[in-house]
Image 1 (cartoon, helix red, strand yellow):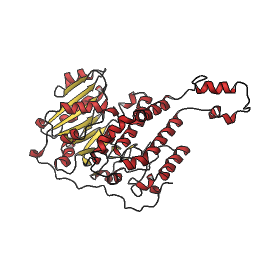
Image 2 (cartoon, helix red, strand yellow):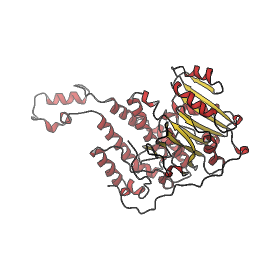
Image 3 (tube, helix red, strand yellow):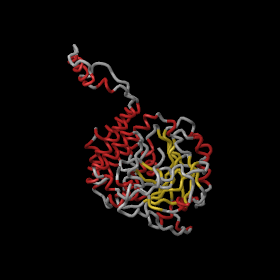
Image 4 (cartoon, one colour):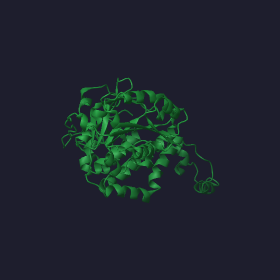
Length: 418
């Protein structure tokens, strides 16, 4: 077992931060709220109605909807019923990352950028609360307290991840409680409800468009910490969320590719050299093991020469040669496993490219990994219960010294839901 699950040699980090003083009317910054939409017409009215009711000067806030080639009439809905919203129409779905960056470029003289999912409604004080820590200079990015749509459970109260990049939404599916009412430092701001200083967003490069969607917020937050900024969770900024309303309409293998690849890319870019050399073998091994578990391959004995009853079987050499050269029968493999392999190859098959992307981050590093590790929350979390996967997870973490990096830094009482 990894040592981080046992005794601790370090005190658990205190991630709480001091509440900030409320902003005076004259201090409220100019904000551009950027919302991405793809066939989400049924969500727009609830989102826009809550934004129209914000307790915020109308002349200091604009709402921009970037539509990613919806086919459900979203554009017409905005033009006819929400004319005060700026509509940007794309001819194709460019993804969450590129769409958010596009909206940021279109922002008019914004001091702060706010990114909001289309399936969210906010409370009137949401924006005042969300931007206050940035205006007060305590951080550069903030994230909101996000409930389920009915307010019965939490969706997000800040975020963390495990050592190989799998993201964690703190509080997800937990009952609301006092622990979620305290402002604190967090690894990343959930892309569905966050604010960022506009100059910082531009300086650190915005969302990584090669991620397309998913984990782009983990990467942005982690990168912000590496480059010397801070991200804070603001419990006073309250919103409500229809969880996974968009992803439920996307084929599972297409989601899986992004959800396997993008954590690998985030780790590859943001760990320092020494830590990446420790983590890379484990994260590739674990991704490969998950692909195998999803493959649906049944009879492994058919591939093992030692299982042949007679090694002198006539034609054996010819059959082996045929298989090695691509001939012979094929194997049916689950599309999820294929997606996993493509995800891994998106990193390994473009090594020079991703080394250049990594260098662009590492050359500007201002904060050590050790200072950031406290924000991971559950670094040794194992996502799979399968015996072989768990054995690999714990074994590689121990053999490569990864568990020692995070010893004593587990700051969540339980593993997040799978």
